[in-house]
Length: 437
Ligand code: LLP
Image (cartoon, rainbow, N blue to C red; front, side):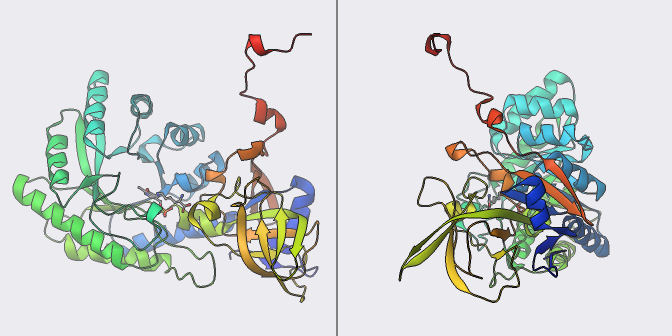
């Protein structure tokens, strides 16, 4: 992917940096982000929308990978930002991301989060349910302000993806259902709320989607809904947000479409189905996360123990695992990897890559074909840019790795490796448990 190559010494290089040198300087495990590839993906979205002639915003779904440097990059590329918690909001604000371009998501925003976001004057709230609508209106009233709102609706589209990341169907914790009339009631409530400006509606059907049909169906359902609201109440939506979910290629056999194909399916659908509902076509917003950063990330590990069970399997253990990448354990996600220090080695064996956590489920890759592996070799797992650092954890009190941006031969730390002190930093020993000297 991206700027990855194999150099004359058979070393993997990313962004012009030899990963063996990165290991020497920064240690492993190490997340490496190919900045050029992230920028390229941002530009593909922006260009595809420009080509459509529609008014648009591309909001990077920061949940995929939210650190201050990434917020800066998204801002530089002209994207907006989707946040889902006070932590992501704080990260964005701390990075100086323009508040007006921040959209706040989530099915259970707390009063504190709402207050923080109102005070920061963010661009809009994507309201998920009636409790939130009332709470938001009440807090805005207290502060004497009005807030912009999109209502999240469930269009009743089942995206073909993992059950845990499919969200467009009626039986979902997210959003107001169109099919049973709840969404129409929500529009009325929002229109009647005196401190809320209803900008439009939002729909997100799922994640890691390879086909355009789900998006086309969602556009059609949302347009039907918009038309019926217009007919019944005269209300038109200025903004229609179609969420994220555009797939990427983790392994051979994954068949994502080009960014431009997804965007074209959506914008064509909007032109077709929204024609005549309002005086103009709505503004179209999307929220890609995975497809902006996923393929740009690589995790570099050092091989430690190798256990061969003759006739059964060879386990190759690396110095990370489900703490830096919980996706295989959570979703049975599949990854590919290369031997980064001997990528040209023609020997071949089939091994399974184990993490170092005390848990049998901590396996990163089953049955991977690699050159003959030994201790101290470097393993590079690709496509780890999305939902890896973001979902990393300290199980077994393992420290989170550093994150680098690499670009044109330069490597910059964007998140430092956690220290042992970080691990105990929030621990408190109550006086009565303290060691008597
Ligand atoms: N917008 C909304 C409202 C979302 O819920 C999500 C993802 C996105 C946008 C971005 O979707 P993307 O373009 O990244 O597919 N942890 C899971 C993925 C959870 C996705 C949650 N929502 C994973 O590792 O696969």
